Length: 199
Image 1: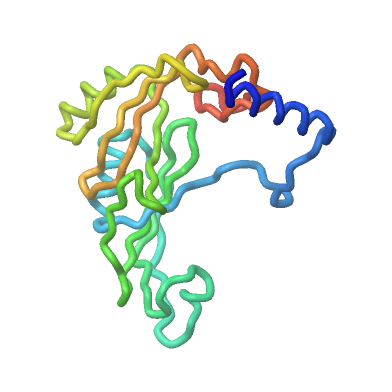
Image 2: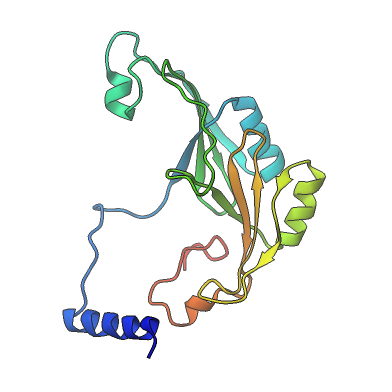
């Protein structure tokens, strides 16, 4: 018996002996509302998310600052003299929203983390056809990576992915799994999907 099989059996025994346990949760938590991203140029970012990705602008507001006190530090954990010049909220299809920030701050750093860096991240958009997405992105002059890559084994089998990059370096992904993924056949919890937002 291999280690993976032994581990799965041990986990099943332990979990079975514990009975059904409910996970703790923030009271009233319903789901992911938005992801916030600080961008170097608001016009460039809005043009990219609306004119290339296909999101829609919902609203813009700001600026926010505190010239003398610690409001910005207390509220947001940033330098007390940080200024949010503008915030723009965009809605992206049937998925959650993206909040774009244009900040200035005395201690501001210009970081472009790789996906492998601690704190690195990417935003994935569900598309109907990853190959069509690649053709479109290439035609728009957007930097794309290897792919479309179909995943054929393991719990994520059934998805196809393609990473691409915004002009200022933000990592993004196009993903599709029209027939679902392998893990769903035996999963108690399935991942939220914009294909069926109520599922």
